[in-house]
Image (cartoon, rainbow, N blue to C red; front, side, top):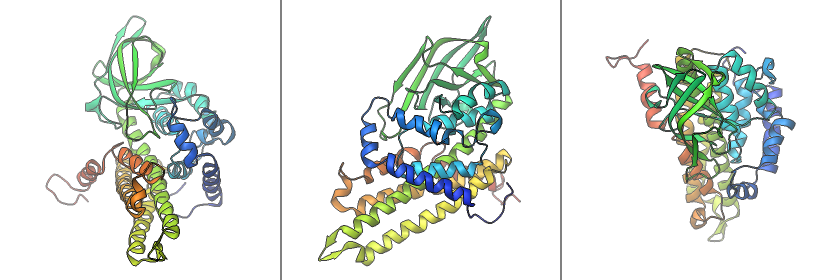
Length: 387
């Protein structure tokens, strides 16, 4: 797909967006989300199976050569926007966004042929452990070590925050192998693997702590090593950042929709509060921020669909994720405020979006970190604009 200045969706893309909106409005309601939040798994297995076997969403951006639909990154962001809007509880982000993207960008051909068809069919859940710190890629945070032995490798180390780490059927973990980055496929039930769920703020998306204690793996577990992993994981970070920004955009939109619906029903001084100028102004500010974010997110998605250089991709992702994180936090906060006293109560949904906004803003680069990265990419060492 060639990059143009026309950000309008095609007829097929509109159909994908509308079908995702309708399906999730029916299956990921507030009641359904709250019910799943209380389960040990954190997601509805039957709904997850439907996403893969019936809807084919798990195959969206996976190439046809590996059993996927071969669609662009734009189609994936359209689906993710609606998932974020409905706070869908599923291993989709961990498996399809993080897992499949890692295999395509940092795995070797053998690994792609082995695992991508299973993901596309919805039969395999997986996740990615970037390093000892948060959900973000930084070579300095890779503290796990792999040592070669006669029949394979022995891995030891910790991964502080692994999305859906408790329920994933396969872990893709980065470790240092003789001084270079290496990507390993680790079965969660292997001896020496200890997985503990974090008591996280956002219960709609589970995060785990993974510790490896002299885990023995065969040679087939090594998926890639060296520069391919280091460069590939940088691209994974950027692509996943754009995907997460699409989710945040959907969440911000729902915060506005919930607020508009409440303001139309809430009566004060004999009038619906949506007639008050102050309420109109605050809702209008939410809308302006959302539309600016939508342009940033889908602009970045279009760039991503053209297979740009890593530096360009990282810059686009940083801008989109910063816009989306700020907008989602602002809109979730405003939704609570404009709901008045009930905005803080468990019975109303704004607090769920506020928690998701808080948690997701720290994944794949906080706004503060990303702004510094954008500045560094645009300015040279002397502080002048790099042309």
